[in-house]
Each structure stands twice: as C-alpha cells, then as structure tokens.
Image (cartoon, rainbow, N blue to C red; front, side, top):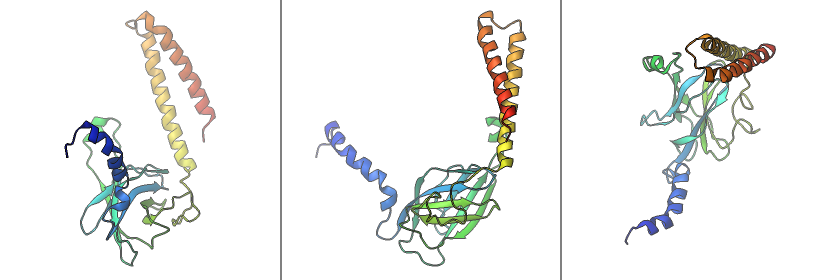
Length: 222
C-alpha cells in the first residue's frame, strides 16, 4: 500500500489512540503497565523520584517530588497482573540541589537515596504506581487506581499534602527576601546617573509596587 500524506492523516487518530493506551496495555498478557506518580508529605524536596525494577534495573517516573506536593503521571512500570507476596520496587530519590544558580547546581554531585520496598496488595484496578514519601522520611509504594483524595486511598495519610506552618514560613521568608533584593536593585537603578530618563517612570512604578508587596507580605506572615 502506498503510504502518502492522505494515508497518514487517516491513520493518525488510530496511532494516537494506541500511544495513549500504551501504559495500560504494556505486555498485557503477562503484566500490568502502570503510570508512575509521586506524593510527598514531607518538607524535603527531591529533584527526581524513580521507580526501578530490581530485576531488570529499568526505571520509570522521574518527576520531581516537591515538598508537600505531588507529581504528574509518567509512563511506565510493569507489575505482575495478579498481586503476590514479595513483589518489590526500588525507589530512588535524587536529593534537591541547593545551588542558587544553574551553574552552581550543574557542578553539584548527584546524591541518590535508594530503598527497596515490598508492594502491598493492589487496590482497586491498579493503573498507577504511587511513590509516597512520608514526614518521617519513610517511603512506600502503592499500585492502585485511587489518588490521595479518594476514601479508598491505601496510604497511611489520607488526602493531599498540607504544608506545615514551618514550611509556609520558609517560603514566606524566601519570597520576602527576593522582593527586598529586587527593590534594592531597582532603587540603585533609579539613582544611577547612567539610567535612561525614559526608563525612570516605569522603574519608579515598579518600586512603588514592590514596596506595597513587601508591606502586604510582612502583614501576612504565617
């Protein structure tokens, strides 16, 4: 059959549909293909959260696990179609890099936390392998079609993460410091005789907005 543009346009919807269901049908005869996601109930962020098959060393997932946050869904991790005792996954968490600039972070050494976990009985009709990070730094993994908002969620903490007051204050302090730094920079620019006069009105307006934003932030300390 001649494969031309017209043929491609007719086949494209079918090809897209096959791609979108790839995880669900991965090795459908002898395994389940699950997407991988994460939920982090702790105040520690990680640059990556991977699910790794201890036998094949194949990895899936990889999204960041932000403090008190949750990742999206990535493809794909294979599990036996029927749960049995002893099914394990190795969770690998990449510690967050602390450099302030891209250049600083690029030279930091990758530090991975690795933990092999036994997966408990599947819940519902498993479609996602959840990597779960608890406040005590314990790690769990669940194969389920429920997310943390569902009453059937198998995790020991129910619901989505709620930032602690300590963490909220940390973010507040960072935001306040950033705005004060920018304010100082803008004031320096206005005072600089080399600054073009045409730029001064917009800069002064930015200074006024920053000053008000700082006042509002200082009033809203968690």
